[in-house]
Length: 175
Image (cartoon, rainbow, N blue to C red; front, top):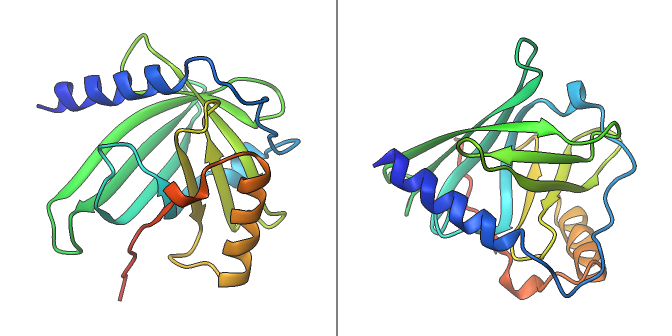
């Protein structure tokens, strides 16, 4: 069953990485990979079909020194806070020296673009996108973001020609 899920995720990313009618996305100038590692709460997204209805979604990045890659662990509850716990492991490879573009791999040999579009100087929030703008993830080191910060991020995504009407908040409740 997990293989089927990975195949569906890979197909989704294959489709989303195809040519885009938009200009290239603007990425952050550089990323300190070590500072980026850790737990990120998914605040909102244009979700993949796997993520629809996700609650308490968290993406955790761990630098794998031996393999020189990032191990990615994505978890969420499906449909509600008490819903079935879903877990997905992936691998990410830093694509260039600036650290702002990765290739994410659900299973070998396919890798898909993963672009860091926004990141504050304190590494408290980030925005990840894909070239054709079909998906985006707004994440933070805490389960919530100040509304003003969130709206500023949304405005920057508008400037990057994202359809912000498609962005859905991800319920987070860690009490």
